[in-house]
Image (cartoon, rainbow, N blue to C red):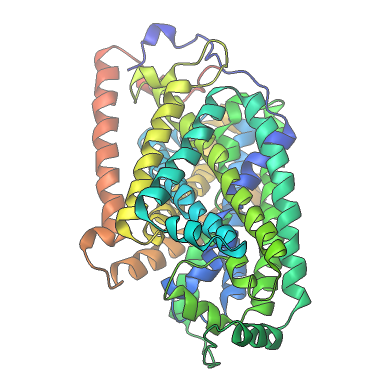
Length: 498
């Protein structure tokens, strides 16, 4: 619990992240498994989606755009570490602020583990492409796959602890490499057609799929749109770095806008290019048997050298996810501790590196659970589904926070620097809340009706259990603050110190 006497003391964080580093944080959080895996493994998760992946992608972008606007509005007025928690707690309700951010923290903790876990198949594809079949087989074994995933994860835990300048110097070059190598996929995808792919597949001894038609089904289309919505999640990590951004009132909204539009355009081109060459029937056939990736699919028509290059690009994209998401997770925990609703130790800041090192270590530990959970579940889509549930709740509450801010906290509302006209802003936020809640209902319906081996493979009850744990933590710590004489109304209406 936070001592009320030290509430006005500086946090120890420093504002060293510029616009490029902030935009890279959002871009690298969004590009990764979402682009290289999800649009293709979707054929297994939503088996009736067939040829309608790209339109579903575009529909899935709509709620993400509306949520991005809400984040930009609130980040411009409340640039603090742990953005989503601070935004909802000050604009809507402190309990909902905690639940929104605890939901986000849990979902992203799981997905960080998922990202680390699914990185290993890319290394497997590299080994297979250069003829090291024994190594490729070894990378499929459980101990090796889990061990490498944990190694990658904890490497970036260390980088995050050592300061935001090292973090930025690591992330930005990796982002440039990611776009350069990802561009090869786009060029290669539009350089071949499906007839050439089928001929190459037959020549290599692969199983040529039955070229059946894929009828349109609304239930599959909407379910796929909800899953693909998760590919646009990540721009929210920019808001979590609000306590370390230079010129935050302008830089945070600008970085959110850059991230959502750059990534959105890249997603469309990338997915369109792969499906231009690879028949969806073959993607569906292979996804039913094993984890597939964009580079692995295109490797049928590419030379081993080019295959290695695009697999390397995919691995870099996944690597980029880890430091950006760890930053986001740790700043949420830091903000809770600063407000006194999580153990005080989590707000500790390293005296030399100026990072919340205890919160970063705790985030790494939770993400390690995600690695182990992905392996035990045998299907990383469980982690994706939990994350989608979490972020739909989070984003809907962010839109509601935009609506409530002028009435609940007019002083903070006066600081908004983006979309200042409330007559335009509020209808957009209301539309966002409705669309996101609609997506949430579709996602829950799909999850509860899924045929799974055990109840804990349904993401909804797992999420509800975690939210129950979060509720117990919140009210226990809130009660401790009341007994310490803290003015809770004042605490949850004012911004924490910088």
